[in-house]
Image 1 (cartoon, rainbow, N blue to C red):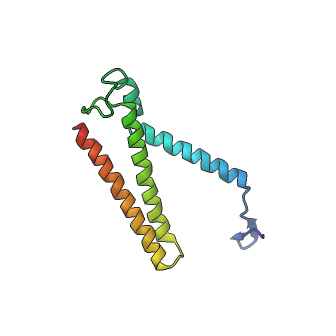
Image 2 (cartoon, rainbow, N blue to C red):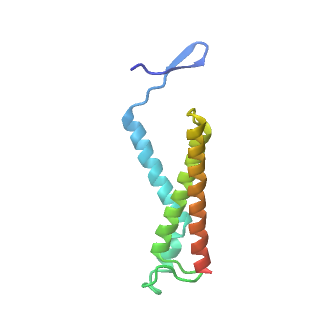
Image 3 (cartoon, rainbow, N blue to C red):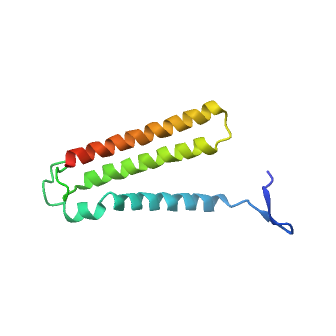
Length: 128
């Protein structure tokens, strides 16, 4: 297999082949970053500080100021689900596949985003 060559300017030819180990490391690092960022966004500190001592038997505490670890995990999964739907929309938009496959990717992306939104709104409805 030959590596794809790219011209930066008219005088320089660059080899675009990266080692596979660096791609895997980047994928692992970006996945850890996304999960950590979404966990923080879904209230990790609030659940650690406020939700650990009160009503520990409940899965969802119907209060806006108290949150359990289980709620944080569920909200993180919902965020990741919505992000995967956006990724499917992106792949459907840039794909060179037949229009039927592009439509399937776009439809799947919208359905997954819709499911994530409904789940998120249901949890908010329970909390209020």
